[in-house]
Length: 202
Image 1 (cartoon, rainbow, N blue to C red):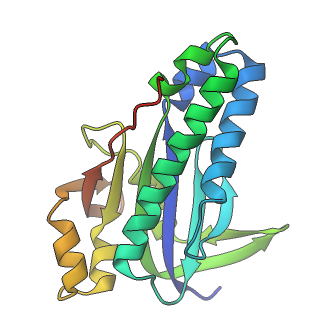
Image 2 (image 1 turned 90 degrees about the horizontal axis):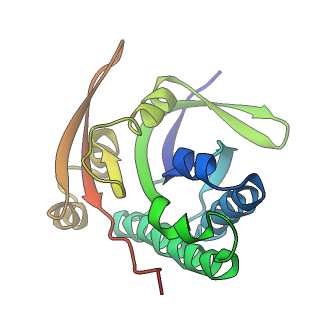
């Protein structure tokens, strides 16, 4: 199985487990798919869906990376569209059990990673991503970032854009550094930026 240069993007809904345990099934079965669909249809840079994993979407893009600022904008766009849908859903579901908790519990974090060698296997109508860096991307969700909502970029992705990329360097001034130790893999450096939650309670 050949490996290809691949961008991985994982938008992940925070508060999913708590919401599923507190809200009625009828409500949660409408809210979560609606939010995931909104994220998928907010994709403007040609990302492809590999898997939908309950509370997250595994996007990927082969070949040339998008412009760095376009990639950052896309992630912020995912976040803002997520909250627009959240507000719409709260308005529609406010009288349902648990409906008033929707904006308080749910949020969005986004992981970006890059690898030169990601294998791809067709499974039905989807592409299954294979390789160590797929594991790394998912493990980056289990970090110690002290925020509920954020955008996280692995150092591997930043290196793929080049150390001298001025747009990258300027944008990164807003980010904080972090590191994650992954068993059998080692230390993975990353940068993260908090994403502000818009007011959706009105």
